[in-house]
Amino acid sequence: MIKLAPSILSADFSELKKAVQLVDESGGHMVHIDVMDGHFVPNITLGPPIIKSLRKHTKLPFDVHLMISNPDKYIEDFHKAGADILTVHAEATPHLHRTIQYIKSLGMKAGVALNPATDLSCLKYIISDLDMVLIMTVNPGFGGQDLIPACINKIKDLSNYVKANSLSVEIEVDGGINLSNIEKFIKAGANILVAGSAIYNSSNPSKSIEDFIKRFSEFEGKE
Ligand code: DX5
Ligand code: ZN
Image 1 (cartoon, rainbow, N blue to C red):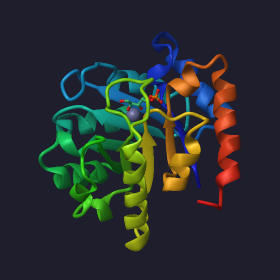
Image 2 (cartoon, protein in one colour):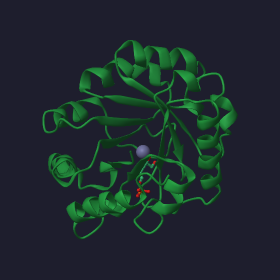
Image 3 (cartoon, protein in one colour):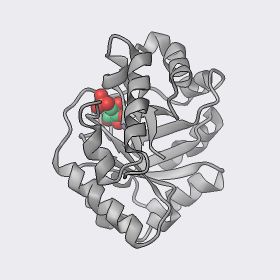
Image 4 (cartoon, helix red, strand yellow):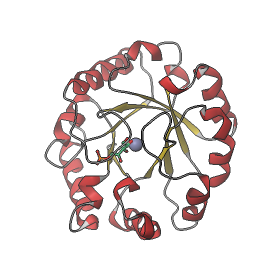
């Protein structure tokens, strides 16, 4: 199944409750929440208190993308705030195996994100423990950037690896995704698509979500 994870990074931060409810009402599958610390990436966004305050406004899974150094220090806080899927960057933690086991021990799904220049080989000894791999298709830190084309081959390589090894890991893609380029991502093997500016910077965010979902149905069964 192809799923849409609208990223509230591009929403109006004074209206986050509405931004989250809109995902629910328009048929989105999960809410993608970008956490940035001004250290691992050159931008600062939000943390556990805001996630906690949004938790009561939807039953949809919270797909929390941590772009922070030392993620281990905050994993329990994100769990308590209501994260369902917690994704850490491979580049941000020296003990990836330990970090992943910690996330799973708290009952959350665990994902690993890779920056555009990070090779897939770093996943070899951890991928069978993962629920999700997040391939960044822009350099993390900001919404509204253009897709880096070389990342499409990386998605294909990962998808081939997942199939060849009969793994059940989901492949999420994040950055520069819009209605006119989703075909590339889906054909490459991605099954969770994050979109921020394409939804929240559009004149009608609800309709944008519905348009994505409609387009997905054209690809269902063909990936
Ligand atoms: C970027 C974030 C993305 C961002 C995507 O660092 O991880 O989730 O919101 O935004 P768009 O869809 O505008 O590229
Ligand atoms: Zn993200």
